[in-house]
Amino acid sequence: MIFINIFFRYSILLTDKDALLSLRLANLINYFMNYKKLFNALFIIILTFLMITSFKVPFRANSEEIKLMIVTDFGTIKLKLYNETPVHRDNFVKLIKAHYFDSLMFHRVIQNFMIQGGDPDSKNAPPLIELGNGGPGYNLPAEFNSKLFHKKGVLAAARDSDLENPSQASSASQFYIVQGRVYNDSLLNIQAKRITKLKLFNTVVNRDENKLLLKRYQAFVKTQQEDSMKVLNDIITKQVEAELPATKLYTFTDEQIKTYTTIGGTPHLDQSYTVFGEVYEGIEVIDSIAKQTVGKYNRPVSDIRMKISIIE
Image (cartoon, rainbow, N blue to C red):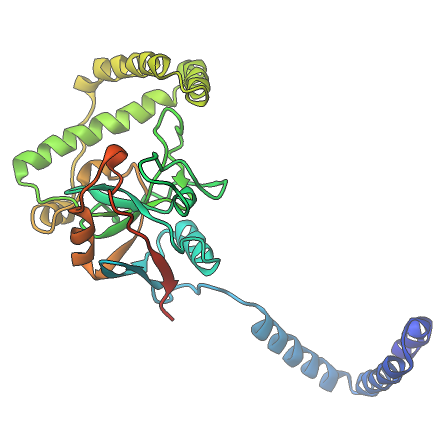
């Protein structure tokens, strides 16, 4: 009788129609309580059904990679997002579904390097002004993966410099697609030295003894005191150069070497910027955009706009 008692206690809060339905439900439950085994079995079945139908998982483990397309005046680029970088993947999908990228520009284009977009300030930006400082108001933690590197066609997250951003957190919306170039063994060795220096720079920046310097640098950034910023950058650089001869040289994997010497890419960014996807169709569109005439700040003279959507 427990369900009947509960019904009468709260029936005053219900409409006549709801009260009648609730009374019928209470009677039905009490009927099943006389058959506990049957009731328990039905309860487990119903609970399981509700959990399966109501628990929505946007990306299941081991699911196929999410695919998307970027439509431009130069053609369509199709990409897939890596499941190995779930934070960047899910955030990118969220912004796409919110139409965040619609009509934004590829605002920074450097041939044989990359094409960059995703700054919301570019939507209504007048000609010639510098872009690249906008975003949704939050960053993403870095998701470095040694198996994901900057081969031609990868999608990666832009970010601020190490002195502004010692954790190397990613911009939540600004991204770039690598065009890069092909390297021979000699040039790749130079890139290995470059990576070694960049990784050491980040290590030095994050040391306790440089915390005060870091705060001062970040304050100078806000007030745009570029001369003071350069002085502090030089201090860190001198520390790096003093330690560099004794630092172990970065080593490329066999897969990186094969890729960079055949397909190409931008190896010096490896393990410093998060790679979270790659182009699987329309790589020629990147080449077309990358060769467009640019002006100050590497901004294309003619605006190159985009629209991004999920491929269902």
